[in-house]
Image (cartoon, rainbow, N blue to C red; front, side, top):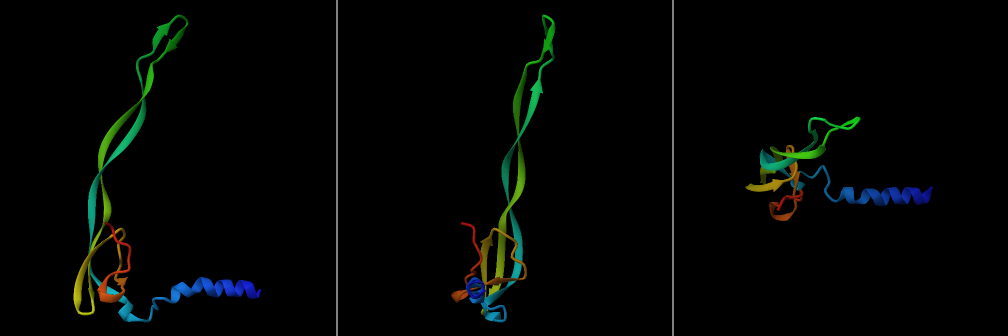
Length: 114
């Protein structure tokens, strides 16, 4: 029982690194705009020719055909946020919500796209 309790306490320690009560650990999001990119998507389907009579049997020549189409997808979000009297911009792979965790100098600790 004591071993289980110790593991539970150790598992919770990283969650105390940025206390939710500390308003300085978060920045206020001003705006978030999706960034779209175009991707090519393959659509494969089976295509058969008209059946040919070969002796007593009918056979159709079939093959797999790939058709390509273009699709718009969200690649990330351009985010503007306010922290410690300054405004910062970053690109994130997810929509951030109303606030972002930050570290020194206002830099977001959120995952950024390169």
